[in-house]
Image (cartoon, rainbow, N blue to C red; front, top):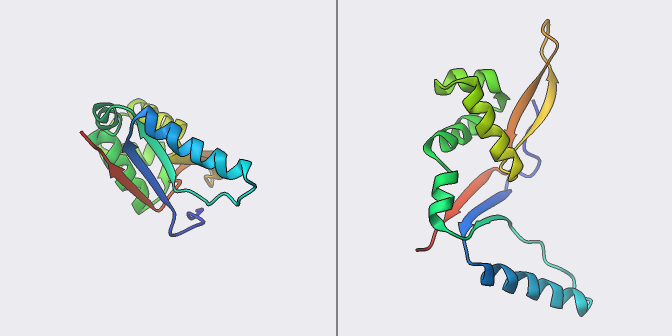
Length: 131
């Protein structure tokens, strides 16, 4: 199975305002305009409303993330291990993939063709919420 390439990688999930977002983008663009080297930033997923963040990162999704961290695996095995329906796990995985928390790849399943393996995009997930 594939491993996360950068063992120190971090994905920050936080609540922040639109003004904060535009301030960060503005600073980066000003640096680019001056020809300055753009410093790599921590990959960040921002929610304007902390309640939206908490709703998105439900207990079920956090349990999936914990399970995937232990061992990247197929949706079928993730569903079995978390005692959930495959359709519910598939929906959650699709949502997590859409925002970049997980990624999938196809792997050979000996005697059964291929299956989709789910893995995290970052070694650590840091959650920040401000109210």
